[in-house]
Length: 69
Image (cartoon, rainbow, N blue to C red; front, side):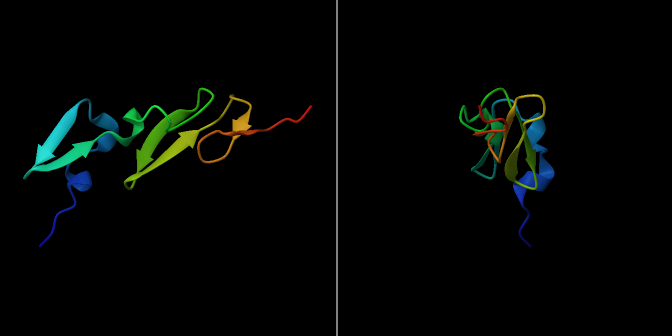
């Protein structure tokens, strides 16, 4: 049977690099472009998401301005 390494190690808790049988698991939120404008990155089921609350921005990466002038 195949084991997904993301289920073995919670990627929100990874600091640095983890290797399981030569497969590298990294914290996906370490990407400097994961979230913009001060959004908080988190990983859920192997996907990155951004909490854009109180940033004034919205969208998957907090890219879109909520208010237009």
